[in-house]
Picture 1: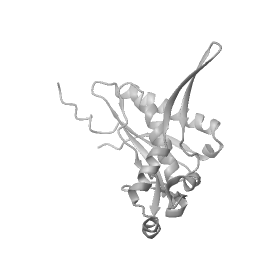
Picture 2: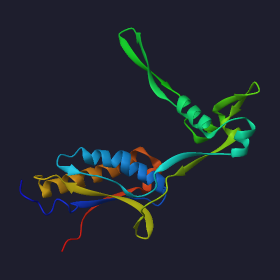
Picture 3: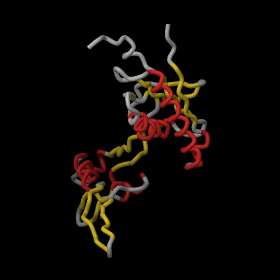
Length: 203
């Protein structure tokens, strides 16, 4: 197969910025929404998202509180993994319609994790708030992207070998434009969300 020297050079960079959304929110939009749509374009590779913060829900346990109740950190981990589940529970047929039923035990808000029971001590339930502090935090940030002086995110776009550069660039541009319009129509908080696809500088 002939060597393609342009295969390792990004076709363009898709940036996602906002004046109101946090780095965690921008990363979620870029990674789980925009990147998945870009990957659906034939001949396009969108390998990663740079910048932003990867959201993590962290439970910081208090060692003294755990030891006073005869518990270990693994008891907290085991309780969270057993109770925060989303699994199919079967189906129910009503008339001509067959409904799928899912057991959704995932909390809608982070604060609800404080009420999760993790153990029973001396006949009394021990809740998460009794032994730990749950925080809506982020993974340790390993890269930072700045757009006009603000921390934002971007996605490098590559083309697959044999794909047409001009066609792919046009498809990416249309998708990015339509994505930005759709977000602004569907979510008021995204009114300041900006998406743009620009060519990479070459020599």
